[in-house]
Length: 222
Ligand SMILES: [Zn+2]
Ligand SMILES: [Zn+2]
Image (cartoon, rainbow, N blue to C red; front, side, top):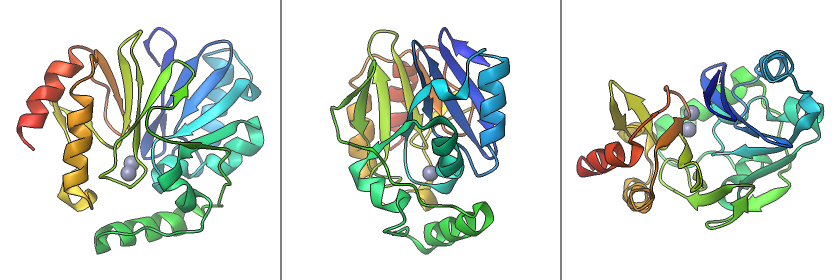
C-alpha cells in the first residue's frame, strides 16, 4: 500500500519491503525467499509498472529476512544491488554472521530455510553517499553495515531493523539482536539530529508523523 506519495510498503514473508516510485523504481529490501512473486505482482497490479523498471535494490543490512529473495529479484530486474561495504561480504557469502550465539543460530536457520543463494553486490555504500534522493547514513549496531536512508525533502527515512514502532512508541531491536550496543547508541544519536516526519521500519508499521519527536523519546531510554 502507498504510505506517502510515491512510497509503497509491500509486506513480504517475515519482513517489509519498500518501493520508491519515480522515473525508475527503487526497491528497499527483498524479504525472505519466496517473496519475489509477491513483489513482482505488486509492481504490476498496483503500481502498474514492469518489474524491470526496478533499477536499484538497496539492502538495509545483510540478514536473511531482508535479502532472501535478492538472488531471484536481481535476475528478474537486472537491477544494481547496493549495500553498505561492511555488510557486502555477508551477502556475497564470503563471511557468515558474527556476534552472539543467538544471532549466529538465527542466521544459520534462515539460511537453511531460505536456501539463500549468494549475490555479488554492485554498489558498495558508505556513510554520506547519495542514492537518488536518499542519503546513506551508516548506523552500525544491529549489524556492522546497517544503514538508514534519509530524504531531507520529504523528511522520510528507511530504518531497516534499527527501529520498530510498537503501540505508538519507537523501540530498538532488543538486546539479543544488538551485538554492538555502544555503536548502536552512537548510530541513534546521529539520527536524532535529522528532521524526520516518517520512518519506515523493517518489520512493524511505519511511524507516519512527528518521527523526530518520537525518536528523541526513544533515545532517552538508551
Ligand atoms: Zn536484522
Ligand atoms: Zn529483519
